[in-house]
Amino acid sequence: MDKKRVAVAMGGYSSEFSISINSGNVVCEFLDPSKYEVFPVHILKEGWFYVDKQEKKWPIDKNDFSFEVNGGKIIPDVVFNTIHGTPGEDGYLQAYLKLIGIPYTGCDHYPSALSFNKRDCLSVLKHFNVLSAKSYYINKGNKIDPLEIVKQTGLPCFVKPNRSGSSYGVSKVNYVEDLPAAIEKAFTEDSEILVESALTGVEVGVGVYNQRDKIIALPPTEIVSKNEFFDYAAKYLGESEEITPARIPAEQIKMIQEEAVRIYKLLNMNGLTRSDFIIQDGKPYFLEINTNPGLSKESIVPKQVRETGMDLTEFFGILVENVLRTRY
Image: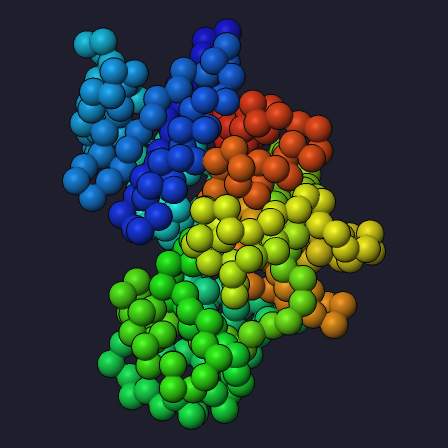
């Protein structure tokens, strides 16, 4: 059997590019070499490149996503998308790959764009009775009235860039006089902002993926931050505990998994996602859905995968085969 050529896309144009490189390198390490030829592809502001084992960069021809290897032209059979942020998590890369006819892991361009825009995603899901925090929206250039914002969201509240990840630009605000500085910080990441009431309860994240037509929820992870919230340092610098499975009653685990699967279906997702919730008063309040969650060895989803008894080679293989099966 001929090996399928898998280009692992990593990097991106956002503040999350280095985190994405880590995720992409893990995928390259664990994809089964007996089944796949694996090609690391860096998609960066300075250019798109296949990076070989000697770390030499070979430019990508964007006409067909091809690159040179040993004097020959390679066009991938599939792209494994591990880009966090733009252009891999907001629909741009997916739309491009769809136009040139190369299959890719994860969801299509529209569900990706919708879910990346937190405000739009929340607005859609509220119509399906998905619980979420009280919110207030601000665009750059709007007149800002801190008292009006607090009247809507209460204190404490969170100020977030609308289209960003890894908690870049996010602040927890306890006092109304601190709102303007938090808003300015969020504007460094995006021209649209979301202010949300602070929910109180247990924070959990749950991975969901499909295997052919079957949609499967992974064991939820409980997130216990040593900081005021699950910020960048808590996510990536060890300043949190991530406990899998979550220390919540079995009926709450089932409830969270069912809600995550329901949201996955409502948003027409495909491939791997991770949905984050806070359980307040025994009910799951939705925070956000990530269509390209972190895949470093100590990231949340890989921990959940290992908890099921699978290893990452098997899991990444499922994600690739889902895509190949639709074309070959």
